[in-house]
Length: 147
Image (cartoon, rainbow, N blue to C red):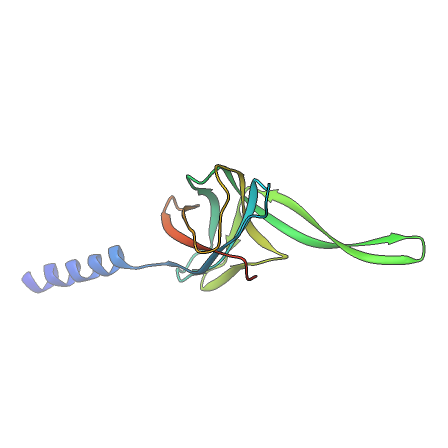
């Protein structure tokens, strides 16, 4: 009986301390003069056996934090053709089981809107990531101008 109880406690502790979501390379873009918005990028690795969604981001440095996706659109004007980036807000973004989602320039990213103060290179921004399974992950973005 003691062995069964010990084994159950070991299994339970492994489950409790498992880290199904790992976040790395968290950076925020330095704001340009007069701007009240910036973008945050990171890699989110889902080590769980189930798909997971990033559903919200909270921070105290801006009034709003939104999940966005940029995509390239070809524009044609007369004989000229060029590419433009279009951005749209998303309710969530999926991270498949055992995969990594990269939030990067030109793709998925977090927009910080109505910043309470400008962000300068070297500043740190605390963010709380909220996932579909109701878990939350605290991360810190380093502000940089080198993107």
